[in-house]
Length: 178
Image (cartoon, rainbow, N blue to C red; front, side):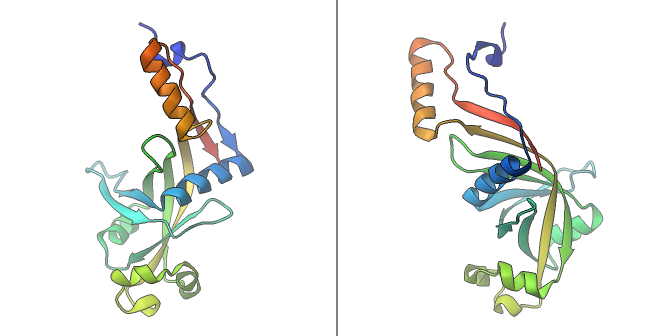
């Protein structure tokens, strides 16, 4: 039996490097705003997973979050700074898998820069809440899955595939070398 990849006429593998990789990382991470933030990835224990809002992706590809100093996540990062972030922009496109190293700080200027008033739901004293910490994730490895021509074309190709029994896959995927 042939693999699905052998049935595709179009080339769907496209690793990206440098500026193109950074652009794709930012596009997906900022397009979703929320990811599954996984810790304890090197401990052999089940992953600790929670949804987190990305506050910013900087020009180097670092992902920034605000977190409570006394959270389980911060404690887990202090024990093992390796993290895994999983993003899904829509149900048809914009999937991102990032491994990285997490760093915790209490940088007041960075808290000010990243602050969003909606965060007051978690940090009731506002941006001066003494429980706020900054988590910076520096990607060490990243991989994406997307579509080439947008969700509408991807849907049409998927529908045509189902009708004619031939794969017309509009997907594209690859490593992101940042």
